[in-house]
Amino acid sequence: MTPQAERFSIIVAGDDDAINLAEGALLVAASEYPGLDVGACLERLARLGVDLSLRLRPDISAADKIIMLNRYLFDELGFRANSDDYYDPRNSFLNDVLERKLGIPLTLAIIYMEIGRHIGLPLQGVSFPGHFLVRCALREGAVILDPYARGVSLGVDDLKARLAAIGQAAVPSRSVVAAMLTAASNRDMLGRLLRNLKAIYTQRKDWLRALAIADHIIFLSPGHAVEYRDRGLFYQHLECFRAALFDLQSYLEMLPGAEDADAIRQQMIELQAVAARLN
Image 1 (cartoon, helix red, strand yellow):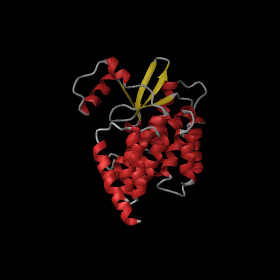
Image 2 (cartoon, rainbow, N blue to C red; image 1 turned 120 degrees about the vertical axis):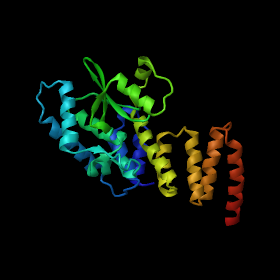
Image 3 (cartoon, one colour; image 1 turned 90 degrees about the vertical axis):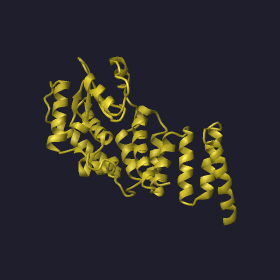
Image 4 (cartoon, rainbow, N blue to C red; image 1 turned 60 degrees about the horizontal axis):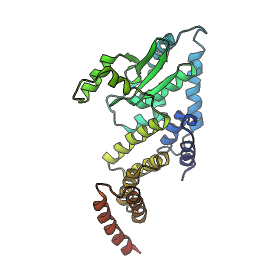
């Protein structure tokens, strides 16, 4: 295990409130960039926040802080959505997003929240269906913001339209939409980041990178049986048969009634035969 992976396993084992989200995201990026200086990246983010905070009047309202944050991040610094190459893995690595100023909804939201924290904005992530958002509690009520769209504020009708665009069959009520706007935990956000990368690498059949991400997912969610199954299949593709057998066995022990249990048992029989021939 690399020092960065060990650090990731340590921070996600603690209380959710104690997890430094930006650090966790950068530790994920270190699976791709083993020499990544996580501390330097965190300092770079902090400097951006301090730079903006020094420009603000002491009596500035939260609503005006949001306007200033949007201008600073998107107009001045030039952060933007990478809609041309959405599934580029670099969009999910926070160091790359900082360097290239291109990202997906989640990574742009993490940077938005981190800089917003330095200017006293109570920002929280929202795992809205299909598109990650940010909420901010104001005196007048919560406002929903979209860092992927330059921090635009979204009303209920906008959110309903987005649900319709991703195939939501029925038009949801205001209360249903409101229920979709609960704050995401730090673990939720790191899990979403990791699942994005896992899906990209699986689609590309890049099993070695998929394996590194699967390790991080299991550090984050050791009770999720399906993650052991998937990691076992990545090991199988990499011809690490004993490791594959161990994970597939763990999957069946954790979820003996799984729909694919019979298929996995048959696969294990075949793997055992291959492993025996290699002895």
